[in-house]
Image (cartoon, rainbow, N blue to C red; front, top):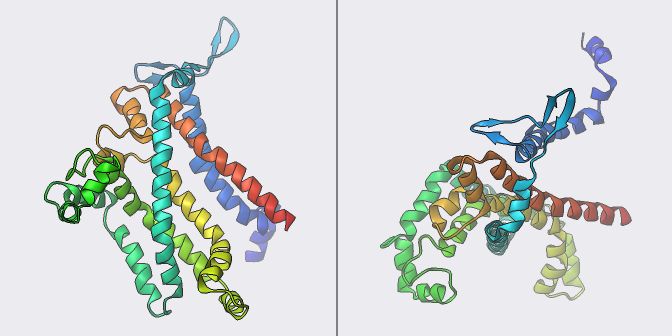
Amino acid sequence: MLERLRTLRPAWLAGRSAVIAVPYGWLLIFFLLPFLILAKISVSEMETVVIKDLITFKDGLLVLSLKLSNYVFMTEDELYFKTYLASLKYAGITTLLCLLIGYPFAYFMARAKSTVQPLLLMLVMLPFWTSFLLRVYAWKGLLSDHGWISDLLIATGLDGLLFSAGLIPAEGKFMNSPFSLVLGMTYTYLPFMVLPLYSNLSKMDLRLLEAAADLGATPWTAFWKITVPLSKAGIIAGAMLVFIPCVGEFVIPELLGGPETLMIGRVVWDEFFSNNDWPMASSLAVVMVLLIIVPLAIFNKYQAESQEKR
């Protein structure tokens, strides 16, 4: 019976083609198709709550109507440029902080005893057992007046340092500031940096470090010239997993960033649900996706060419 089913199966569905078809099918259904729908809405006219069709028949003629005024308006209004810039800035700072905190933690996990590693891995995964929204709300209590984190920062005098750096609006006031925004995003996305780094570092061949030590390299030299280059793939994977969702983040800027901290996710939300302007919101989302995808595509092409040259 199984043999007969195998003979009836199309040739393209066998072996390597079937394995490759799964991720491509996933990308087609859950990324390309929604993106095309979004792109269509961004160049459509909206009448009340109905999106007009792009192609219509009028007097026997096929008429294609593309509304590009939303994209033109985005180039004329500085608000959108500043919002995109702020989103990229906060996403970049969060990615850098996650890397600086996550790399030592992942390195320690990878070098820990095999009996301890599952416990450390569980500690990284533990926050996911609680709702994302609850965890962000918890930071509001910790950073508000008389919260124990805010009291600790005031007691150590760090609030004055943060105020001097322009990260908080006044000494002792931590909520609704760039500081609370970056702190919340770093806490939320840190596991996404640690896990790929740990996966990469735990597979590293330690005999290379022993060989470097035999040749006279100091531990720091061996780390910088062997461990860091070999963990490059983990660093890139972790940076992408943190940077991409941070650019379009909405919940954390809304709850911790305050009204003065504008990010593109909040602007898209306002256009969709406050102004009810779906084409404008779709245009903002399309540009945001392109800002993320184009550099990634160029980097992947460069990386593929580098591997071919080896």
